[in-house]
Image (cartoon, rainbow, N blue to C red; front, side, top):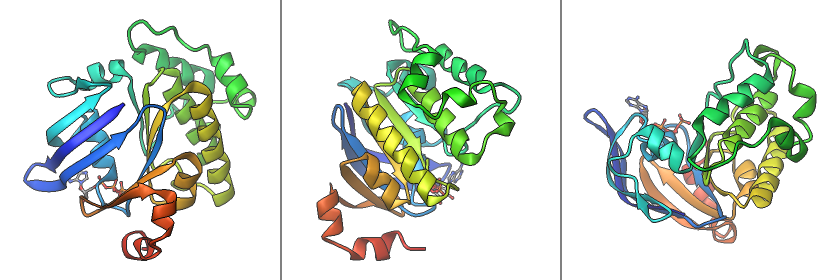
Length: 234
Ligand SMILES: Nc1ncnc2c1ncn2[C@@H]1O[C@H](COP(=O)(O)OP(=O)(O)OP(=O)(O)O)[C@@H](O)[C@H]1O
């Protein structure tokens, strides 16, 4: 689904990502772990050509992304749910969700909001609320649902658990996994929260100062407990 080879990214003269190789197979859930400043958001933005300058090969479903702008990449099926969630505070949840229809890839029928409500039982009671009336967890839920409504082939979640209480974060991770399985979606999650990432993915890449320092499944990650203390503890 997604293949990244020898990716380097920079902001001006400042290099942030160094020769990254990463794959997300079709239908798989992959975690990109790393502490603040490791380069997780930069990788996601590089995928969408939304910020950093990058070099290297990136392909989605065999189609090279080089030369394509952000909107074209989104239309190919790349959808980013950014760290700051971007919920419009004076629109209702339903209106926030309907905005996603503008980003639909060609040929895809829009998913009705009410259908998403069946997939996410926590959503229907929120539909008439205004954005500013939502808690952090509710905002995250709406941001994820809006991302899914764009009909992505690959959903990119940037620190979805940030600022959420642990139990709420786990409930949301569970919802994300269920949605992934139901919709046959591929997922790349940037997180520092290992518990969240573990709940909705099978494979892990660990990033430190812009370089990959580990990749493997969760069993391999757990077999090296020093990874957590060296690269994720604050
Ligand atoms: N727009 C920018 N201009 C210059 N440097 C930036 C910019 N955005 C991020 N950086 C720098 O790039 C590095 C990687 O940041 P990035 O946001 O990708 O990390 P992250 O792993 O997503 O962490 P965080 O959780 O803080 O978002 C950091 O050193 C950061 O200061």
